[in-house]
View (cartoon, rainbow, N blue to C red):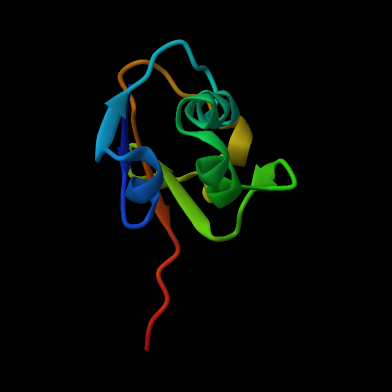
Length: 89
């Protein structure tokens, strides 16, 4: 599947996108990405092993918050987008 990164998440991955295979849930995907990109990435996306409230993840344009959150099923032809919550005023 294609995983796209935005904003400061790219500082941790040093890329805009990556292809990943062999993951069936968002939790598995994030764990794999943590193995690839290290502690800074982990600390950005997880808070006490749950998804940080600072991160938004979309699967094919749908927010996982409205699906099964970290247990959202994914497959090889999905597109996953990871970006930080944006605040402004």
